[in-house]
Image (cartoon, rainbow, N blue to C red; front, top):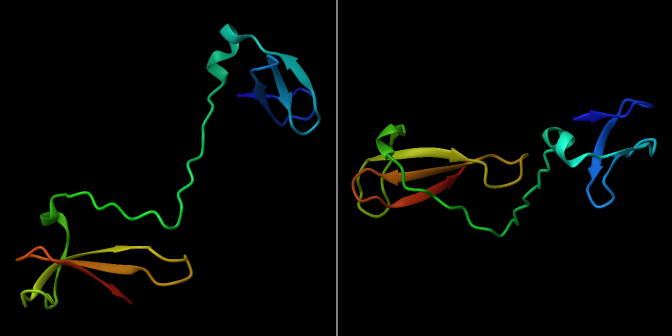
Length: 110
């Protein structure tokens, strides 16, 4: 990271013009690719759309907690459960259940 000598704010690299630029005061300083390579890490934010589905990766379910609840598919009375925030942050989370016998998965909106 490089900081502006005038105002102290973070300077960002402009690789096309090969200069460091302060977004606050406009100060510019030459950029040396070899010397300044360690000071620059460019990250890109990945935005997901609300309509993208939730991908459930199969995992060792024996590590999940179990509860007494009746499976709507086979009638078994024990299921694994986990909780996820699937709606807005000010709404309650969704509890998912997976039957220990038949593997049927369902959810409960609390």
